[in-house]
Image (cartoon, rainbow, N blue to C red):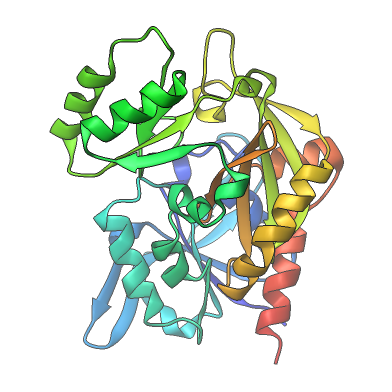
Length: 314
């Protein structure tokens, strides 16, 4: 049965259609006969009991520079849709959090993917704390003395914003680095949020594995290798995607976290694994499905829509 789909995402004109997961999700939905409506997060509103959005009917095509067509600009009631995709990129700030509160008002009558309540309550760098035996040594703190104690214990460490994304603001501080105080002052001047410190994992030089899960089950993985002279493996900052399979350790991690993801309505999730250590669980706007399809031939977008269609079946 054709579904009415609304996609809340960043401006569609700026995306890279060869890599963007939201584009591939929209493309597959269209191929399956579903209708698409697109809007940006600033066009979401609550109006006297109704959740509305201003945007456009959307048609997509795989043509660089000509990858979409918009219909007439209009306001819609999102309760009239079968599915709303929560797909804008972080930062996970109050603007992002507010959209989850508003969308929660129509879910699950309208299926919001992923479930906005748990997207809000399970930020990627915090959900992993429920599985300390799977993760590298980690501390979350704003207090400089606590961060110094962590560095004194572990020496080589990664320091990053708790709610950052795309590799922005990620620093490696090795045993000889003297910049912890300066970085703490820098971050403290920007916001009031804690920082996250993790023991540096040398295996990141071999790659940061992105494992894709659908309904809590692993469907494949890609490896993201840092550029020369770079610690960060994010593709936003030059990380190179490579073909890689799922290891026994990857499957062990997915078996541990999968039941919780299914219970909390997290249909499409990407986790990060370095040297067998779970470092992040990405619920907000996971990526990597186009690379996995190219490497393994796995149509992840189709698997995602099969899961959604099953949930929306009469």
